[in-house]
Image 1 (tube, one colour):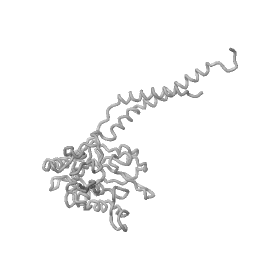
Image 2 (cartoon, rainbow, N blue to C red):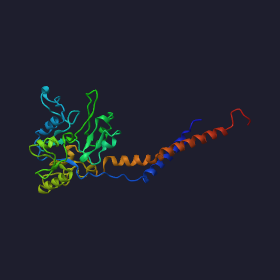
Image 3 (cartoon, helix red, strand yellow):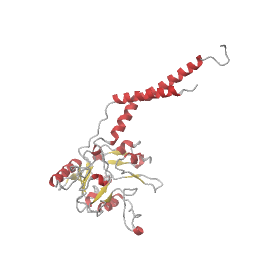
Image 4 (cartoon, rainbow, N blue to C red):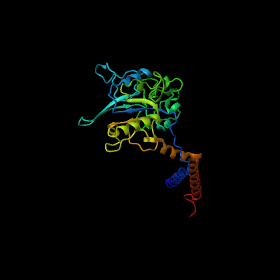
Length: 319
């Protein structure tokens, strides 16, 4: 005897309500904090001249091939965006009237609470030493959930390779030896040749490296020294440090003389991207209570229908 539609819908609705009730009583998710030694970058658009020395240094440090498909004759390294062989890129923003312009450096933001590591089912992406979002290709199955989860559209896939991997900035962690130390500039860094290559070669110090706390202090100092130079997310917003709280905070921070929305950065709240998703899912599956309740209700409905069918008189019987 099959389960009738009314009973099925009633059971599903009851199970759904139970799941919501369980979710409401679930323990709140603990929001991760940046470690005290979290390393990162501070990029200041008002200082960048678009020389792309950082892009070249990144390629040399990470052994990635130049992206020449966008250049006439294929003779120049001219990536237009992050891709399967480009871990950082310099983009150009120009206003419709051409008066306002800005360069913009894109790379992994090394979120304090990354969506990619939460989406990765086998732990190929993890927060490791100094809060760096690190990638272990031996654990990656190529599901690309990290690509869908990242609010900054950073992880890229090597589509042209038979055994593809995910490509993203790891702050040149493979070059690091020992622990970074405070240098003469007051920032905690590795010696030259061991830290993020992009920050080592910038001729204008448009991108600098250090701990997240040091970089935040430097960004606040610059805003205080030049209050009219920097913008907020929108044109009329007060100056802000993008990444200080956006999406729960990032270890790559930005200052900009152009509104951040024009640079195509996402408008995120202070809530980490994975927080809502994990709170709901962990609530539903806590103790596997909701699935057990759902199967129990379905079983009870099937049993009741069978018993009701057994009590009906057979056709052609006595009236």
